[in-house]
Length: 120
Image (cartoon, rainbow, N blue to C red):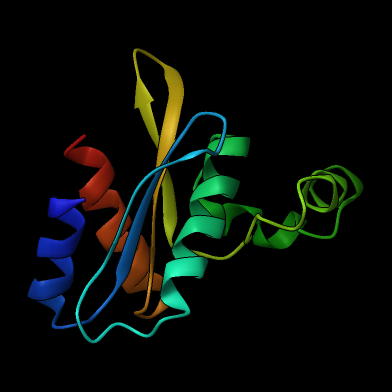
């Protein structure tokens, strides 16, 4: 999470960062001072979606209402957010989790998430 926070500081934005395991369970959450409170929920939802589908959460936006992603989101209690800002954490070719960020623009969030995931 430190690398994601460092990227946010470089971009001069205030964000929240979540890291989840491959099953979408929260491993860590950090909200920067001054980040909007809702960003703590947004970063988690994006991270869960990224871990579930093994791709950046923004890549799911176009398919969000398709039967399979929509059904999975509903069955999971609507915990997933199919918006840009999370990337999967991949080790030895397998998805082991995801890093999600909320609080900046969609592009800034994904940039910070990528920095966070790369450092893990």
